Length: 583
Ligand code: PRX
Image 1 (cartoon, rainbow, N blue to C red):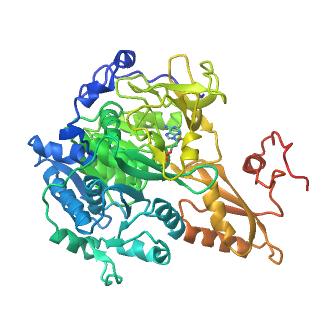
Image 2: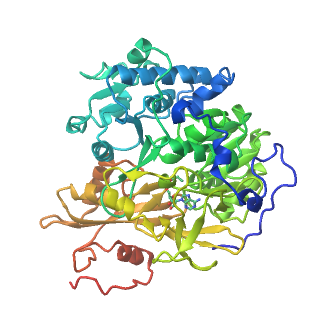
Image 3: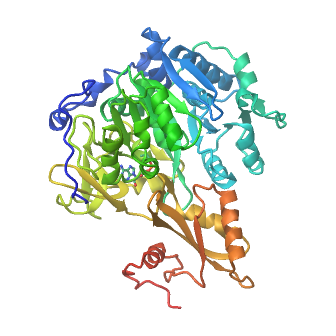
């Protein structure tokens, strides 16, 4: 807990009255039914995320309002109203129906931030199918693992990304349809045999209302998340999650219908769907989608050009902005920017404070994860901020700090961050892995995998992960996935992967490998291994550093001791090594 920064008191006046008032009062006697009254359930107890995000605004007479301003990486600009979104998503739902894709089947996207990913996402949900968005920077291995595990029957992608994974596509027996989006005719290559053209399918499809045959409990979104062991698991949500996604968009991001909102997260990760799609559109705002990557100047330009009022980003981006100086943002005009929030990694107190210097507004940190589906702990608009703290639980959420037996620990002491099960956006299963799902619950608590501490004012402070999962630039990387990729190289006998602290990305992936007999350590081999891993995985996931060692520390049962590798790397005490294999 770094409590050496003074509290930033909430403003005495706000340009727009905050949606959530006093923390304690708003939690008293809270009942989710109060917020459910703001959601438009469909007849016969049906509930559909896409209807809540899009169609209901049209039904209420707001169809002409712009839902999305899109800016492409080549400077293209497109805008879509809520009614455009309704028609496009109906069309995609009808495309799926026309292809005979049935309720509950998994439809995956492997696409950049194109408008079509949004049509596909909500169209899939309208058809009652499960949508699984994949990070477009992934290489073939992560795509194969995830599609194989989910049994996805449809893949919606774009030409250059399809090329990148061409070799693994024939290895997916469940995959029936590959739909290719050729945005603006960017690609002149013909479609591969058997592939379907997104544009042709959509042109031929009816925009008549979709069946919306889903209830609260129907599965909706599947995001893969990494653990310490084994391959990533598909955490599956249900349509009911929309209740908390709507509520937290309103409370923690303080969204009001007149807002112009920009979420910088990629739809391949949960922030990009819960807060880059569902929360903003259920709250009826206008959203900015920028296809391109990070550039400090371009990002400030977007804030200025689109008159952004609410901005949700991440600590690595904030640290990169900080690097380019506090003067640069002041050369842009962002008079209506009124709320800034951050998620995904610990936000250093300096980042919170830098926001104030650069924009006159602090960044509001909040905490949640793939499994929680929506924000659980937040610094919201009408709260005093303690820089370095993740904030306090939102109404309806009970968070706690517990010990290994599931018993609460006193305030001020480190423990496992836990939440009482039953929040509306709680994940329902890890796809085909009940054992792993069950292992996340103990003594009436859901175990988050994070360690934290609560202070006497009820603020939560992040301490670290309680497992070996690496958080690099806000992306969770499972060491096992990286080790498996390295082991496929003929020279590698053993691999152990850790997160190495980094001033910008928080952690970078570092791998230790030992070689098979007959291979000699050399700089050339090290570089070859780096290239090999990058091609299979993705630059964001592949090791930034590889060290070739004679042997790796292992337990007597042969498990590589990553914690020991990390302690050695950091020059820290090695802790309990009694189970270490004798060499
Ligand atoms: O370790 C925590 C970290 O990111 C994890 C969740 O990652 P993921 O499932 O990919 O979900 C991303 C959407 C938030 C958490 O278990 N994390 C998230 N927010 C914070 C954080 N660590 C510190 N401070 C945060 N505010």
